[in-house]
Image (tube, rainbow, N blue to C red):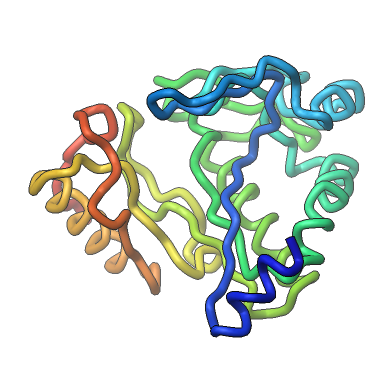
Length: 225
């Protein structure tokens, strides 16, 4: 992995890995013909036994399987997460793309769901902001001030209500994803970029050629301030 990161670095190409707040008890690839992984992630049981998940270890179905959301308000859980990340960070990676699986914790249709964390009950928004802040802060502490994270800014996808995901100071690059692969998807992506820019996000962008072949990712709410 170190060589895999070093070679593009020599060509001034940066390497960013994808991750979320979830650790899975079972997993699958949703793409056509994708694999299934019925066994838990190797670190799932430890996190469950040590109470490192929100909501007393409840698991939730999301688009990569079933898993628990890490409690980023728990000092013990975040110290444990540091150890999970350290091998990847030691290779010299330049950042993480942080996806929005936290929407599925506590119920997919509840906009203001409450999460039971080490600090008490917090809203989904508060949990989201802490998750994005955590990954940026630890990445920069380990790999320097140019370490970056990519987060959603203003977004409405898969039937979830619109919201701003990360605080703008914890979103060096923001992306709007999962639009339809047609002109309506392009319009939605542009709209979300403009709303995000107006809200103060400094580098908003979107999936190249959009991402979804259906209406599933598309709520098409147009511009609002």
